[in-house]
Structures are given as C-alpha cells and as structure tokens.
Length: 282
Image (cartoon, rainbow, N blue to C red; front, side, top):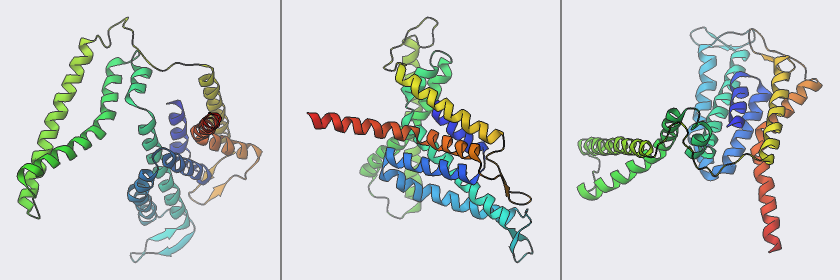
C-alpha cells in the first residue's frame, strides 16, 4: 500500500518528462508481469485511446506558449509548449491508470481489512466490498445474460428485445448485488466485526524482510522527493520550455524514483530465480 501511494503521488504531482516516462514504463512492465496478455489488451483498447485523446485535446484548447508551430483555421495557434504538455499529461494519466490496475490486482480485500480493520472497521469493510463488487458484478451480468438467452432465445437484431433483455439482466443483477451486500453485512455483524477488543485472524505478519523493503522504499521516496523539491528535477512548460540541467543530485533523484517504481518487479524476479534454483535441486 505504501509503495502504490508513493509512486502515484510522485506521478500525479511531478509533471516532468523523465519522471512520467519512468513511471509509465514501470507501470506498463509491472502490469504485463502481473496479467500478461490481458494487460496488453487493456493498454491497447483503453489506455492508448485515453493517451491520444488527452495529447490531442490539450493543444486544441490550450494555446499558451511562445513557440508557435502552426495556426488552426479559426486563427488559434498550436504551440510546442501545449503539445509537449499534452503528451506528458497523457503519459501521466496512462501511468496512473495502469498503477491503479496493478493496485487492484495486488491489493486484495483481505489486505485492506488487515490494514484498516482495527482502525476504521466500517470503512474498511465497505471499501473491501466495493473492490470486490466490480469483478463479481461483471461475472454475474454475464451469467444472468446467458441464462436469459437460454430461456428467451436469441434476441437477434430486434432493438426492443435487446432493450428488454438488458433491463431484465440489470434488474436481476442489481437485486442480487443488494441482497449480497446485506447478507455480507449481517454475517460480519453476527461475528462481532468492529466490536472493541475483537481479535481477527490474518495470514500476514511483519518481519525483517518487510522492514528492509519498507526502509528501501522510504529511502528511494525520500531521495526522489528531495531532488524534486529542491528543483534539481524541474521542468517548466509555460510560457516557454525551461528545465534544469541534470546534475548529480537530479540524476540520483530520477534513479531513486526508477528503483522505487521497479521495486516490486525486482522482488518478484528475485523470488522466481530462487524458486527455480530450489526446484532444480530436487
């Protein structure tokens, strides 16, 4: 949770081409590492159109900047600063979308309950239910739709049958979702969830490895933030493009941010290598 919070905070608030590129590349690589072809499909069908839309939209409506590339038919100029700002903004949005996709895969509902169950039990339960809701709702819609088709037959291209079929599916799925939420709430309440002094079982425990990785995470985050806060990693888009030269501390800040973004992948790769080495000895 701390990793995703640190990475997404820097990605969202530091609009620098190098920082955005590092975050985007690491998010894409980690997404492919976690989901494989599904991540590639998600990037091509959803992330790429969002990037193109944001990159094209900014120079069409934002005409600030001193370097005019050409003028539109209505006389509004398209500037280099607006184009570059649109490209970097598109990369930032795409990186955040992919980081959130990785967060949804890695941070399961039991992890949220473990982190926040004792501090804010009610909000923790609602949040974990909300995260589980979307994939369960999608699967349920597919199941109900298939059942409806087997009962009523193929709707073909008839728009009236199509609308009727869709309304029936949404109605039944929504009813199921509400009943499921009430059932989970009653079940957790009957087990004493949220009562003071209640203990809870968890498979997670904080050991030395976690302390080491968390320390490395905070060191990388601190070096990155220090380099960006002291303007060693700084990029200005308007009114003209201006950036600081890449000094030693600036390079160290970017390297620390790159290490921070690649930290989970490096850990997973290390574990894979160890696992293969152990299997080879059997």
